[in-house]
Image (cartoon, rainbow, N blue to C red; front, side, top):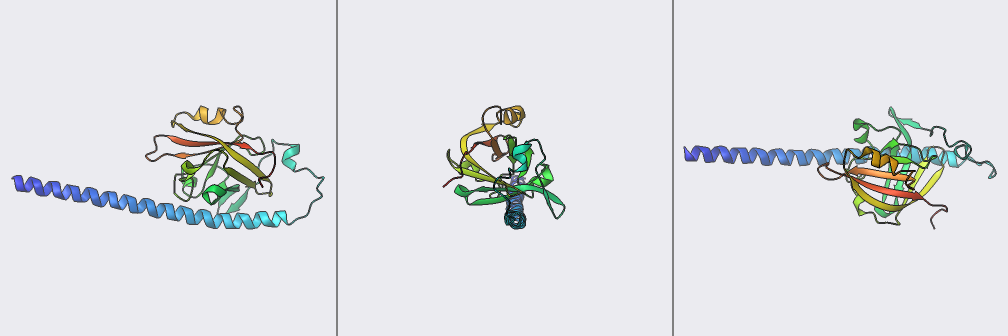
Length: 210
């Protein structure tokens, strides 16, 4: 009887190991797929932005968003998904597209605009903690640069001002600290296990970085 119980325990342990290994492999596959999908979308968006920038406009003409910051941010559709721009973080060697609206399915594709607008200086961008999405945000330091480019080619440069961890139910803190608290851009992702939200607060730079 004792031998039988030992065999059952061994089989259960083996099943648990196989299950854990399968979950790890699935997560790695999902991470790679999300990174590849985001990379392809970024290239398409970058090409569209470059075409827009190639149009020479008189310097005295102000961007529309400076005249009316309340206007909707322009979007571009790729494979049925609407993108609002791109984000670049040089310190992490990261270049990613940003979907216009967040949802759990969208988060598996690319970072998403969670709230606000770059024009109103209150934008929040969320992403999964995939290694090739926002999984490396924890490696940022105060002073690192972040750049968001909208689909009209307008570039918004930011500097990391603070980092914090929030609980999943602290949605109000996530939003009210943005804009009202002096932060023009917020990036956030889940910590390992999903118990906290690692949050990066940024302020807009008055001049382009050197």
